[in-house]
Length: 303
Image (cartoon, rainbow, N blue to C red; front, top):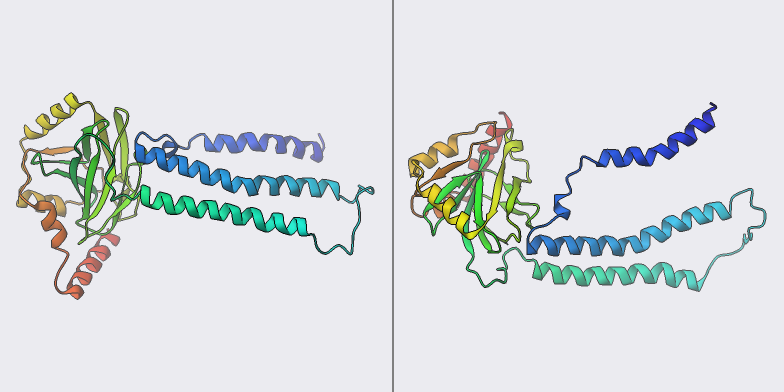
């Protein structure tokens, strides 16, 4: 077999090989299970489709021009003095401008309609959950129920969940890909997020921002369950032997296991814990706060 035939066969197999490399990708963002995730997926499809209106014709035109004006095609029209075409100018400027205007309109509209702070439209009362990112685990506090959990979040299906999020360490990013928006957890600050799930199931949650050597294990399970199963989950948490006192919380915040933290339930939570975690970084002396955060970062970088 000569080299040209071998290269030809390899060229035919190349697309198959590229598809095989993509077979391990987990496209969960394109399989949303909540109204926010669905809206974001549709927006992504629309934006990609609009951009393909330029990309596909350019690819086709490149191949057609290369074939038509190849050296061997002596019948191709030769215009060495050609310099301008009004039709081409209108096309190459008009189409991108129209696409940019459409994308700008979509961006403006979606920035308001998908605002993570905006409550979701529902006839059900939202479940309120306070989230604290730690090294390297997630703490979920249910202030209205007086319970808490580590690395497990539960809520009823088709019910909005209103998250209040802060950090007791450096910045992390709270993200449940199948349910919607990612938002940052920052020390001394409180961010908000509103999500829901339309299907019963366990959804993978994670930190999407590098925060230390144990970051890769900083994941949790978001459980969308029926109303009865949610009440059973609450009862299980309320029956747990552990209580999230100030002392217990201090032990948790100091514990920095590099392995994934076990799911843990707390039957009670010390009052206003979330607020006190947030405010402890809001020192009146801004310089002291910056030094504390810098030292925390340096310590973890050396672990």
